[in-house]
Image (cartoon, rainbow, N blue to C red; front, top):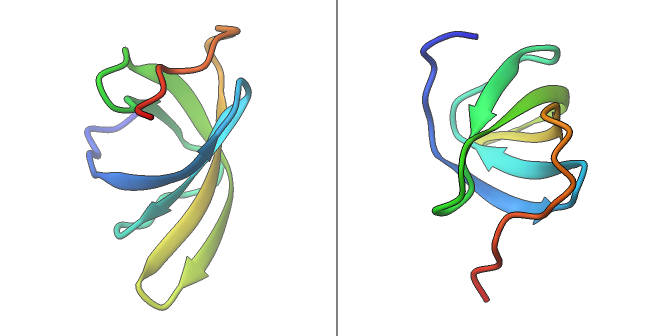
Length: 74
């Protein structure tokens, strides 16, 4: 893992991972620590990316085996 840090907009989240919009690009196969809201960081791997005119949409798979969703902000 690198010292890369950025903010993203979460499109959806499930027990297995999340889909996000990023302004800075990420690469398939790279692992990152991800924090959603005030929740603890979770290890996630980029499994796909789609380049867009103003950034990227990426799918990340959680790798920590935790079987719980982050707290809802609703």
